[in-house]
Length: 279
Image 1 (cartoon, helix red, strand yellow):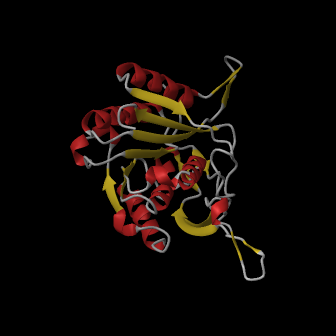
Image 2: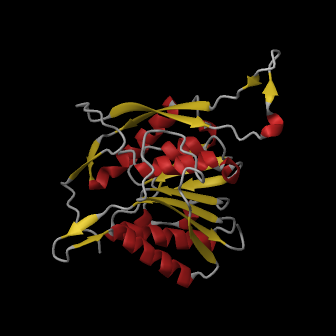
Image 3: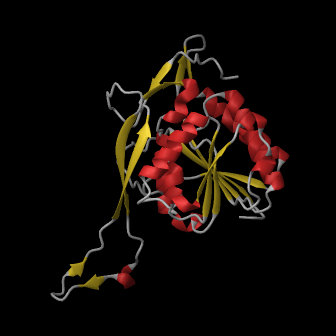
């Protein structure tokens, strides 16, 4: 099991480089949504010049931490969240008027972006203080999100009761929540219970950043948390044959890069788990 990480080990943000000495920082992110209009929608002005449609700009302000220990990593923004936001913005129709559950929402960036399209989004985490930060980020971004459709809820994966979750959920989002094996076990238990009890649930979108370690004893490079995730995927598929697991192509042709705040590396992975009879 990959639980060798000492909670006294501090990890620094890959997204923000601020050296603010305060416990919390406040930083901005810009997303640019490219027009999806086709050639039939091209217009010219009175002088015959092409009337260019500029990308819509979304400015998000986030309260977050730049440095935490492992158990408080939800207070940071991770590259997987940015990839998932790009996917949502590229595939808006998949999320339009849907009821969405975000697991491990952290500071809430994916919730903010998804709320622009969803009919309802239930944004969850296990830490009461973190949920207060999530609520603050919703409040300060009320001009770019639809806060009226966001519900914040505390959920502990290890003591999960599926009756606490709305029966109408259709989509689950989870960004960069794969890093410790016992939490991965708990997360897959949540997936199983929800697929078994929520008849409208058809899709899970989960992003992962493969964190590569070099092991001297074996002179090998491994991604233990990701490798364990793949084992759990195989087990889930074996236990539930109607579920399909698909790794989504994350190149810039498939998923537009709407923000420059991160690098789209090969270590950033997006999986789609879906029910073949519901999707």
